Image (cartoon, rainbow, N blue to C red):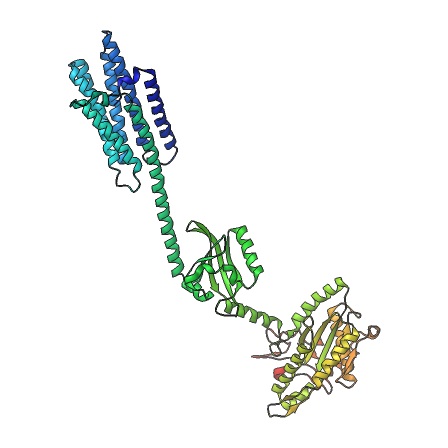
Length: 584
């Protein structure tokens, strides 16, 4: 391809060399990437470099010939360089055609044939005509192979670089054929020195375009994979038995929701992006906590959230698992949900069963003592006051005996409701056992506590309930009061309030009595001689020697257990009996 005019002038050589260096730099840059044809392009550059060196040797041959010196050795070197050029161009063609084609057998066969021809026509049977032909045939063969390999890549989606290289190599091949057949074209046109640097620059552009085409194909492949990935995600989401929502992490807009999620949240599937995931959260702090955990852990499993729907006003509980994924060239939140409303209801029910009395729905003794202990500790740190009230239904056994146990149960239920209505939110009322109730009044002294107790006593006295047979039933209560002025120990407070309750019973019932701090000097709850008939009047919850704690969660446990049934045997109060049967 090259002309000896390249070496006849320094400027010609400089321009040609710079153009070849540009092509070499392009190859080096391309080799840093993952272009599959980079090895073939390297072979092509190596062949062009050797071809230029061979042209230089041709120039030396002409100079030596003009001086009358032997040129066989130089001609051998020239032919050998052109043979190697052909081999490099052939290997480049094989690499561009397919990376899996075997190079060694083909190049070895061509190289062997060429080498034999050089030895034969230069040394064994010298022939200037055959040498001249070989000088052109070697380079024509190489360019013909590389042209065909570039044209073979036209089926690719992005092939601008291959097209440019194919055209450039084809033009060179045509020029070489015109030279070979010498069909009468203007030799100044096809032998001009600038064809080589022009070809090198065009090939540099072609190499860059080939690499750009490769990157474009990779981008297309990546886009195709992303589309397939997104389709798989959509298929998984649509076929999932759980509600699933995908929302953008940047603005929280919902971009995908399956049918189950649409039904669950009342979403219009035609206007997904007008919804934001956070709009469905009932508790903003719950949403903030989820975001904080997601930011710290990147993935959150089994997180409970309280949400609302667009088609209903009743909040419901969901269990969600959330992670971040790439979807449609964006970072999104992938959230799967499971409705656990029924489970949460069962949890609330179990919790209520654990802390509430099943008959009256008031707190039970266990919860009262635990919670009041906390309140006492807080009051101690705040230096605040409080009172404990013990209330007991007067002559409750008479109600049971006269009207039946169902009416007795209704008495306890009405009493519980009256207590809850009469007290503040910060107060605590509990069924302590049988017909006995205990109340914690926060931030009140004796005087205020007595006002509350009197109001409650009068309210109860005005109540009327109907028995099963339609008879009106009236009942009263007695109330005992103790205060933090007496003690800050829950057991002592309850015992002293019960002592005041006993006093109210002794003084005629339907009244309120206070345990004064001065009464402590005569109070000994462990003295068996106190309350001579106490065993007949006090509730069995305070008879520690004969009874264990009553659990309203697990049923009534006593120390007298019969087969298939448990009941509490309690001593009876004189004139004011304890419960029997269902309301005991």
